[in-house]
Amino acid sequence: MKKVYLLLIPILVYGTTWAQWTANTSVNTEVSSTDMGDAQTVTTSDGKTWVAYGKTVPAPNYYEMRAQLLDKNGVKLLGPEGMLVNNVQEASFTTLFAIAIDGNDNLIVAFTSNFNGTTYVNKVSPAGTQVWSPNGSPFPRAIVPKLCVLPNNDVIV
Image 1 (cartoon, rainbow, N blue to C red):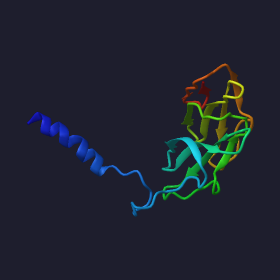
Image 2: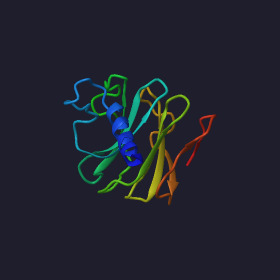
Image 3: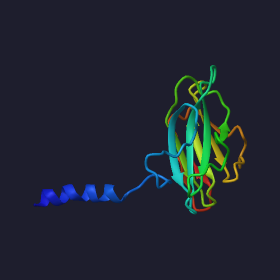
Image 4: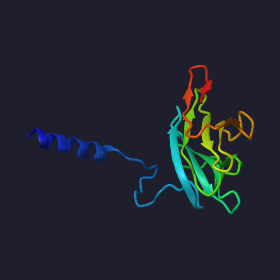
């Protein structure tokens, strides 16, 4: 009998969980109309959703790091393709990257360029502006970035 209850718990959780903004479940919410690599999401304190992703572009860059902010209804707030987070040359494949938000709902993105082996960290406001330099803060020889945001909004990489 215990096994039956354990089987029912995931079914009940799955049946009550939704991951779409639209009531029409046959239509997906589009973040980008172009080819993209990895994507990560994080929600803000007011119910919006940040999406960071690698957009496929022609050689020699191959990928560029972009971000999109979706409101509670899934409406794109930063244009049809989001905003360019950093235009550093990434190489022909994506790497692991990390995202987080601070207390002001700014998006922090850390990613590694395979071209030069440097990790870059950028901070983007909900208005779509760079809080730090558009080139980000470089961390040479950092391969798999992790982020921790402190209560005062400082970021540990």
